[in-house]
Length: 346
Image (cartoon, rainbow, N blue to C red; front, side, top):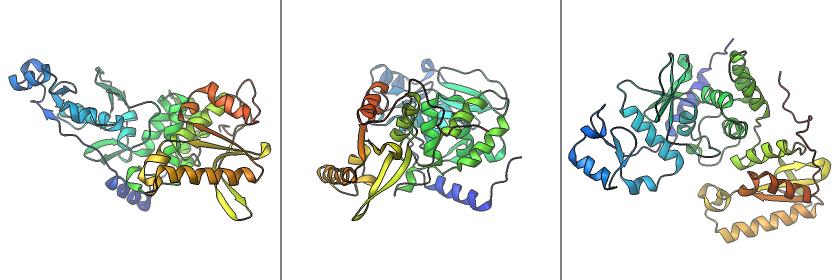
């Protein structure tokens, strides 16, 4: 039986969504339902000469503005365009809801938007329909859109998306530790509640896939790169790491290692670009200062007698490169995924 949502949790989610940054674009919209042949001569002229970019029937945007957008903002612009072609509000789900909620995508959010319908509907090249019967608490308003709730969105992602991408998104949704700028994060979802809610889909398509994803997901993964690294380590046959492990020396706390294998006296660190470029991580420090501080931190950690393996984003999603780094650092590897990872399903 589904547990009722408490007033406190509902208020916390509403407040988080209210402050979530939703990038909306200024689109040029023609009369709803008109095709390109029925638009004004001026719009047709600008589109044919590259002065406007078309986002589907009846929706256009300035090309320079488009080129300046990141993948999430582009997908939300496609959502705006899709909504403009429908008289009744769409309920966006799956990747589209995840993009709006700012869950990170391993890969990118594309031009096809996703919407839910209680009855079968024919999908188009711009809009993919998902037949879903949603309860009232699974539909929320966010930034002028109707979307599936964070809980339902993560369940749908776990049930329908390939393993590595699903783990990365679910990890971000259940993460307890949040950066200073809370407005870029969707509300956190409790991992155990997420697993319980998935039991409602027992026997339905995607249930077993979601069970594996949800029991592989961890609260301690601090970034998408760390999540993808852990997925690769599992698939490559390495032991399961502990996450966010505090390391001390005689002077006190040095910091937390992203991963650690205490049995093998090895620490693992994923170096993402955001650590050196985004203000929420840098706190105004220069790249040179950050690199120097990282070097001092690493030297102190190594001085404790622990080994250290470091890798970048390119290494994290290229299996052979990550395997070489970890094997060179002394981590044992088996020819297939190990059975002792904590992903046992109920």
